[in-house]
Length: 231
Image (cartoon, rainbow, N blue to C red):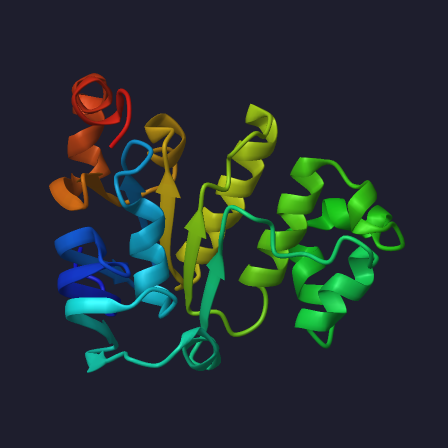
C-alpha cells in the first residue's frame, strides 16, 4: 500500500570535509511505516541519518519533507516534528527520570503511557539506570508529543534481546499511529520484526531495497553478502 512521503531524498551525496561517505542515495520514509536501513559498520548508515537530519552537509542531491526541499539545521527540522536518536543516548545522567521527561514534555502522561516501566523509576537519577532503562527513556522522550518522523540509530546496541523487542514494539506502535520511522540496524533479524520496507547500504550506496515481506526470504544471502565484515 502506498503511503504519504514524509521525508525522502534523491541523489543524496554527503560526507565529512573532503571525505565522501554517501553517493547517490534515494530513500523514502512514508507516514505510518517503519523503514529499516541495513548495512555493515562503515556502510554509511549513521551518515544517512545525520544528512537527513541536517547535521551533515549534503554535497549533492536533495532532502525533502512533505515534498518541499528541507535545508535547515536540525533544530529547525525538529520544530516540524523530526526526532533524531543517535548511538549516544540523549539523556541527562545527573537528572532524574522525571526531570528528563519534563525537559521534553509538559506532561508525563504520554511518555509513561508509551513506557509504563519508567513510572517506578521517576525519582531515580538516570545515571543509575540500566542501559535498557536509559534507552526506554530516550525513546519515550522521542516518541511522545508531536513527533512525525523518527530517525533512530542502533536502538538495540548492547542491550538484552527482551529489551530490544520491547523498544521495537514501541517503535511499531508509533508507526501504526501515523509516524514515519527510519531505523538503522546491523541486526537485520531484529529490524525485520517491525519494518515494512528496507534499504541495504554498502560503501555509501543503496545496493538492495524492497518490502521486508520479500527480503525476509533472502536474509541469509543479505547477511553473507552485505553484513559480513566492514562496509
